[in-house]
Image 1: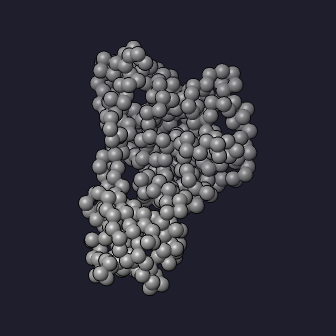
Image 2 (image 1 turned 180 degrees about the vertical axis):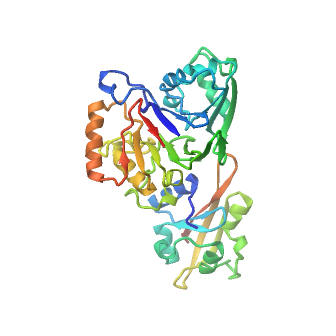
Image 3 (image 1 turned 60 degrees about the horizontal axis):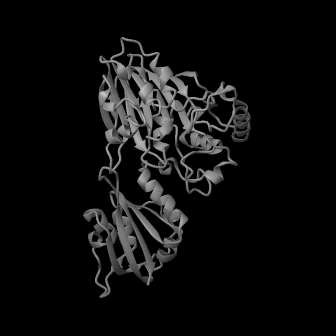
Amino acid sequence: MSTSKSIQLILARQLASCIATPILLVDDQNALVYYNEPAEAIIHQRFDETGEMTAAEWTARFAAVDDDRNPIPPDDRPMMRALAESCPVSQKLWLRSSNGEWRHVQITAFPLIGEKGQLFGAMSIFWAI
Amino acid sequence: MKCTLWGTRGSLATPGPETARYGGNTSCVGVRGQDGAVLVLDAGTGIRGLGKTIDASVRRVDILLTHLHMDHIQGLGFFAPLYRRDVEIHIWGPVSSKVSLRERLMRYLSPPLFPVSLRELPCAITLHEVPCGDVDIGEFRVSSALVCHPGPTVGYRITGAQGSVMTYLPDHEPALGALKFPSLPRAWTSGGSLAASADLLIHDSQFTADEYPSHVGWGHSSLKDTLAFAALADVKHLVPFHHDPGHTDDDIDRLMNEAIAEAKPAYRVSPGREGATFQV
């Protein structure tokens, strides 16, 4: 997964690394290619330790359930839907961090679409509620 | 391939005795293949001199624009082959989501900014929007990718028939937003894949390290960051380019010597000088 990144992903990562809002960034294959320090605090995992993760890896590591504690299938998670549907998606859910603790979070994911309509990935901002 | 620098100045043409050695014309580089293919990288004021060297036997010229800032297109209307009926001119330039390349070029090549309209030119013009994957032009394979600079801007990687590579990134700020540069691997650095292991890298070096902090976001690099980028990309030969119009020849001599002494690059460095030629 260390192939060269598009300028859209590079700039999105630069932005994420400079702000205090927790941010996750996935590429067009749903691989988690970056999360910033504020996100690390919520998911209890350092990006330097995990590096990039495939969709299967990160959705398994950070399980998600709805308010009724029903598991949310990977394809129904905001980031996946933002990519699949090419539109912003907002959702409240419970996210299991690396230490096993469940955190109630609000997530808004949006696709990164290039000049010719090419999909480069998606970004999600989220915070504990 | 043979690369010739026809314009090395950034932002504004700067003629005069204080800039005579490195040159005052804005960005333009000519690339000639062994098969006679002619590539023109950007159409700054340096393109006028290049145009005079294209003889009557040439039937096709490809102009590769990195972006449409004025210093990169101002010479276009003075490129002699545009006024020949027997020449195909292919202009490659960055795509925009709202306005076509033709429409954006016509903003300049039309009255009142220029007396001749794009559609009135006698040559056969074809426009191509990039990035569009790898393209073969004569013996060259040309790759392009968007890079960090305000507005749609691309860099070009040109591979010659023998596999040699030259990369052209005249306006580029890969250090934008980085607290320390470089701090990420090449794959996560703007322009990194275009410049990877290039035999020749022509790269923006507009500012000094002291000038850069007050120009962050303007889309240009400090010479210090350019040297670091070239090391990250593992190039063999760097040509710092797009000199600031406020830097005299003596300034450039001093700044290059200081930066090279500090960085101690493992590759060759030749400050971009108008008229210089490189066999790649």
